[in-house]
Length: 351
Image (cartoon, rainbow, N blue to C red; front, side):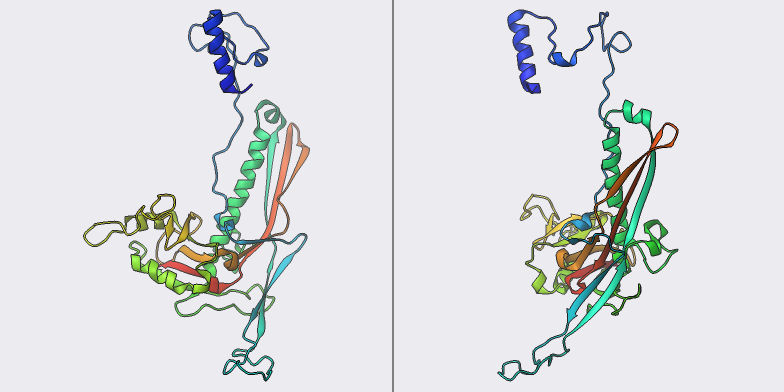
């Protein structure tokens, strides 16, 4: 019997049987107590009910929305290979004569290799707490999984894997290759140098610069124009924008403070800047707030642009009695992330 049925049944008993008090949840009543309950019952015969433990919701890694995700079990590194160049005769391919690898440039490959990175956590929990607090074990595990997702997103966005000192909070040389530390250009995207060194594979991404405190409608138009047309109609093409940048865009109005450029009209869910130029907008607070040199937005076909290689599923182990009265949870998550196709994304950089 569900809660609604219990309430209706209780009302029926009260009306037909004249009961002044009806117990809707008889199976939960295992103790009958006599007391002079006059108010809330606090400290005069009532019992405490302990709600399940919970943790405030964290923002799970938004970069996983649409990005290419693969599983690479038991690997210490992941190598990426891109085919480049053309096979056909670029001067006149419309011939029966076969001239192998006559393209301009000729067919070739570029490679780069990144080591597997690991996030770890160890947390002691009092055994008494695990038995006394309802749902504390599941609350800890669920929050830990979201915490790891939060940490990986911070590293994917802002970590400098070439320096051990500039971004230690996001991993430094032990972290992922952050999107903010790839090269940028206003003229052409390009693959990074080919090879196995940690300095290889730092690609160049096209950028559109904007005044950090005053982005314009034309800045957005120009950013879309920079993304090659072959990516426009693909299903995972989307904006990732810092929430502060979204606020700026929502305030953009026509000359004289008239109608907002991005209105509710035409948005599938009725939300201003839920879509821009047909591409969904994903709020991403792991990008940088708009300022000079900041990476505050990305327009990309994410399945082509970013690859996340998870070494294995998140591992959580419980160690009993590591200290008297405590159990210790050990957790680790191993992964690699990289820009796979630098031609499939555009950066919005503050200036």
